[in-house]
Amino acid sequence: MSTKFDVVVVGAGPAGLAAAYKLASSGFKVLVVERGREPGSKQVYGGRIYAYWLDKYLPEFKNAPIDRWVRKEKVSFMSDEEVTTVEFEVVKPEKKSFVAPLAAFTSWLGKLATSAGAKIVGEVVVDELLRDEKGKFVGIRSGGDKVYAD
Image (cartoon, rainbow, N blue to C red; front, side):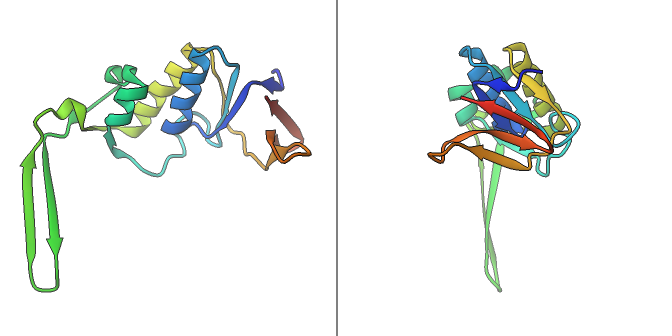
């Protein structure tokens, strides 16, 4: 494996993989390192995903494994004595948010990133972010291995 990349992304969650995909699609040599065995294996949240930024920066998300678009919202305000709930329907659900199994969504993003040229390596624990003499981040250290990025 080459130890010099344009960009090293730490973490193969949705944000890291989306960044890796966009960078690799733009011609950058990208390495994604993930503590888990594969993208999505160490995630701690899931469920609802908001579409605004995805639609703006990653329109390919519409091909992701989406369970369903959120069509109704309920917001409740509570005090010690009472509850007030407001319910409304979303006019254009495909522009707002959706529910997706996060492991499947992240796996899909990983495949998208690798199809664009990013390299994903699992079971890598980053012990240190490396800096140059001016304080700029220039790479990572994992155990005795160092990987550098421009």
